[in-house]
Amino acid sequence: MKKMIFAASAVGLFVAGSAFAQDVEIGTWSGFRKGAVSFTFDDGAPSHVSDAGPLFDKYGYKATFNLVVNWSPDWSGFGNMAKNGHEIASHSNTHGQNMSGEEASSKQAIAGKIQQKYGIITLAYPNCNVPNESAVLQNYIVGRICNSGNSIVGKDGPSNWARVPAIMTGPNGSNDFKGPMGSVVSSNSWVSFLTHGFSGKNNGNANYSPTDIGLIEDALKYAQQNDKDIWVAPMGHVAMYIKERKASKAQASSSGSTITVQLTHNIKDNVSNYDYPLSLRVKYSGSTANVTQAGAKLESKINGGYVYFDAVPNAGEIVIAGEGSGPSPESSSSVIASSADVVKSSSSGGFGRSSSSRVGRSSSSMGFMSSSTDALPEDPSLLAVSVYRSADNYIMVNNAQGKSITVFNSLGHVVRTTRGIGCVQKVYTGAKGVYIVKVGTRTFKTSL
Image (cartoon, rainbow, N blue to C red; front, side, top):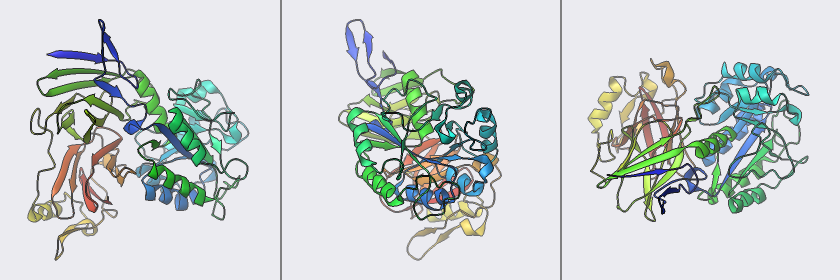
């Protein structure tokens, strides 16, 4: 058996005697993109729920929404946005001139209202005034300020995680989104935007420097056109990715046609487990690959002599084998469920226990109805699960740690069965159409 150990870096190099190896790499950014962009929204405006959330969902992107506890935000609306992959974060209790003393209490208040896997890990300062930095870093992994000279952050993050800059948008800031987004691609960097309300919308207290929402849509269109280069993700998720990438090690061993990878770090603290998926690529000569982590099927692709996939640090052994060889995953995409089997699953409660979420026959194919009105599942841990489409056309399952996941196409065929291994997980990509995703005892409808 040949064994290789690789340090955590964008190039994943390890020196063994006088030899260099480059068989395992951790992407600088998710999907081995060239730059990262975060959109952040302050004050918890009604328009964030009614306009911003649906706009980002339309393009398959997610943003960060910073709430002021005492301003009575739409907790239900923001809670649904959290379940759909957006990050809900703190903007203090009172929006006073300086929020010192509210670092922990605002976090706790929001966490009592909003369910999300990573909790409340991001803080945006009211009036851009930095409070007690020590208290910030005891409760959050990132604190956001406003413009600070050059607001572009390098690939290894800021020198001070309590002072991450952002570009203010609107008439009191900048209306240029594409320029900074292009800059991070050319410099392998990260930029964040800070928006309050939108021109002509219901903004509540978020009335500072209202931004034309059409400009944000243009920015999202630009991001989608350049999705292979630009990673759009919430601020807290990007921060986790950077910290994990810098701290992680990949240990790889090969035996015949099978490669085994261990992805680990030891930076877990009282704020986060740091279990956001990292993007890896492994030198690979095969034409097909079956990639699993702790037995759960991972989505993967082969390109240019590498196999690419996302894996969660400290979530178990990663095995790469030729299709049909090596350890068996929980299933493969060749498994087919008959119409009768799917209907039986529905009648036994597998597809939800309310008539509105049943699986039914249509004259031409298996027709599925949305499970948005499911009765509450018996397992409370399923309440925060969500399913949505990403900008790069994957079905994403959020907050399904340890749960069984089955993807059905519109004909009732099982196209993927796996298990949840992290908060944000790619579970399937394929032809355009409607899919049903069963997570534990809940079902969801989504489209590619």
